[in-house]
Image 1 (cartoon, helix red, strand yellow):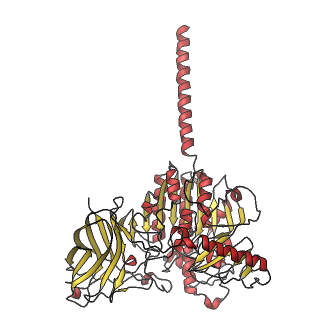
Image 2: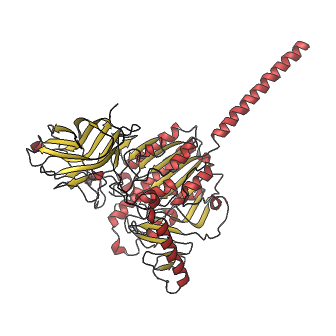
Image 3: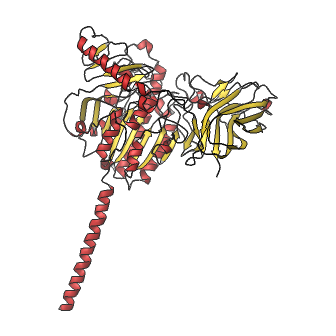
Length: 596
């Protein structure tokens, strides 16, 4: 009996130990899953009106619309008039002038390095972080996504790309060739990231490149719109380019299909209830097309240029079908997502945004007294819950006159004066911080040893020209004389030996040029001996006029050699010493790789 009691006691002790272990394991699992995953999807140049959930009958976006059905739709959400400022505001929760973003190219798109990003915030809380798509806030490390809080990156860091079918891309700092239609390829990588991190909290950022020009869409999406009659048109039909509208609609339906792929994977992995999904766009539409009758498009601080969709889904936490009437903005996303996820924000800089969690989780529809400011190219506008004051001082009642057709500043003088004063204060507080700093391009950081210097970041001299007016995807051409040169203003972080490579094309009749790359008294020379003269491409995929976007071609690497570079700032210069033919070569980019 005593032996039986001892055995029973031992069995009980073992069972109790198992319960403790199970409890600990379950507690660990609960702790690991306490923070929800976050999936943020950002479209490029898609207007508020390019979704069927907002009433557009020209297209169907059921997957994106489902986020509104199963979560919250923000009725008045605002971004910036153009790309990189909106991205900076999403990343930091602060107005973009505070972060040094003053342009969309040639270095002005870079976000100051002392700004803390949303990826920094979530990675500090133990999240796996990945970005897959168009970055547009800096290319060279530490402006690169891998220097701004992201563990993984795949996409392109420039503002736009010249062709969307298997283009050159950046894979964690390495130059690679994409696979197929770019939004599909980006989605593939995002899906891989979600699968790989399904057992821990992840922050996945998918900034699509569409429907930004060039207007390209696969046949399977475009055929529906090729000759379609469109019931919803821009309010002044003569201003609408139907070819561009049809292409944009096809591109938006492709985005919807890819959003559906991500939502299905969350269902398959049983992660839907543990994942916050966010969808918005970066500015107004890139052409005059149906946008709910609003005034303005991309580039404008009027309502149509800055109003964006915002849909947020978190099953079980955000009530299905929630409508949020209060005004809000891209600056609100960081504090909102951090609060929803229970992630602390540690920053020595105050945010301009505010958490809108109370509007998501309760039925509070009380109007807000806040003001949201929009700025671009020296023009500033302010939006309240009821009014908009435009850069010219015109006041509009946005409830009674959403198309901004009647200036009421003379009738509502008190409101006009208050908003004018508010803009003056905002300019003094925020715009005064926007100093167009003389910032060189970074080279030589050991965290990412290869620094790629595209033509976009260089300066042509003499007769050298860009291949197109828009610099982001341009290359240098018309290099014909010994006086011509190309320069990059760089800052070498680490003194050491560097391998220099130029990406070039050159016809057979022009081979033989001797070129020199120099920085101060350090120089290396090489000769172009291999012809490489591929055709221009990209136009064969266009569904509408590409405007200022450059056509592209395949560039070949030419190793110039190795040179020792001192730390510090200097002017990197590429010039020709001998030109036996009519031209030297075309140049897409230059890379400097810090050797071990």
